[in-house]
Length: 512
Image 1: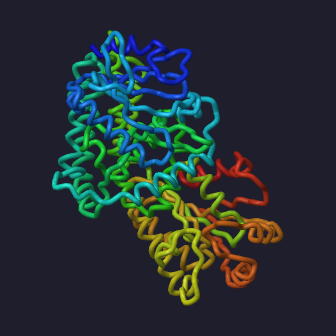
Image 2 (image 1 turned 180 degrees about the vertical axis):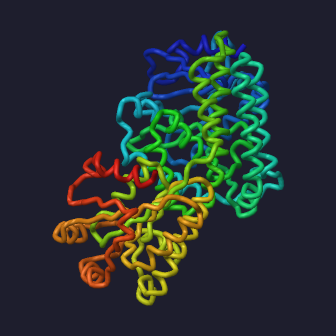
Image 3 (image 1 turned 90 degrees about the vertical axis):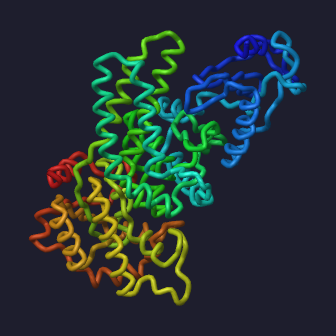
């Protein structure tokens, strides 16, 4: 019935605005009609278990929900819900009684979807940084889950994991089911490891009404700024989730596209804004779940089209899911250098390439005092006393210990100008049984001073007077420390000039 309506709506004369040609896009749950300056999204009358659009009143309700939820991102893409009256053969938009409903959106060019931007080489670091800040601020602004239902509990989050596996199994051949069984076993094991943390984070209010489907194909450049759209409206449990699960889909998608560097740039920027390093322990579990969601969607589409479900794309998602369920090889890196030498730029470059979690002392120091990264200390706020510095290094050590225990590589971006500060982290590395590398960053004095003069909108408050003071106080690396140090000269400008082949080779050798 609805399919015949779609055929009728392909006539340009159906629309109350200029339309030359109607283009139809189809997913496993909807049709999207591109007509002139607008897009009309009509839900398919399907029931996949995780969604039920079989009745007209359900489709109307979920159209309203789609407007409400996606309007939160402030992009202006979502306009209204349009009733479609008349008949299947002669539909009339805006007329009642309605035989169908459509979500009306502003049309955008498919080339501006982030998956297409990535393929075309148009997805920049600036886009990733903006998106990470936007999602961090979006999540922080959301009210904590106050429903009596157990959304986001450990028992709740394992159910869709099991459902994905159950629904995917009959669509696969015997070889694929062997891989699926390995994923099922690893998923249950990782869930058991994470279940206490999942429930604790729910009790702490980390479960919120999120986007729920944040992958590259659901983010578009509007005015050259990435804007999420097409969040989940059809299933409360898939939307009321831990905020770290929300970003896990994007991280998995970037990794699937062989851009782990961009995934870690997004993650580190997001964590720097939110301070939610506690959530990293759940990322492997949630990313694997998201990979299996994509595998299931590939299989469902193939089944709808009469194609063989098991193909390279589905296999790639399943293999990625299994990989994500296994812990990494932890390592601890600490920087050493004066203000203006470029510790943060070098650290960020290393974090994207290894990859690693980037902990920045300037940011964590201000977080301890209730400040945002770019806030400046007010009179009476003793951010830079010996006590405040000691507390900052203690905080960095505790965060590092937690992250190392999760199998993460960690780079701590701090001056580490005193031997006792470096010794504390060397002791931590020994206790955790992980490699330690001191990244010794040097730069010409004139270059450092110029960088400090040019610094704007940065977490660091250091100026030339601070540089002068620290130059007098600094304790150089001792011979025993240089055994596990890598020296990088950072007189060069531009990230692309950092970590040349020799630098990177020495760093990898130190890590073993």
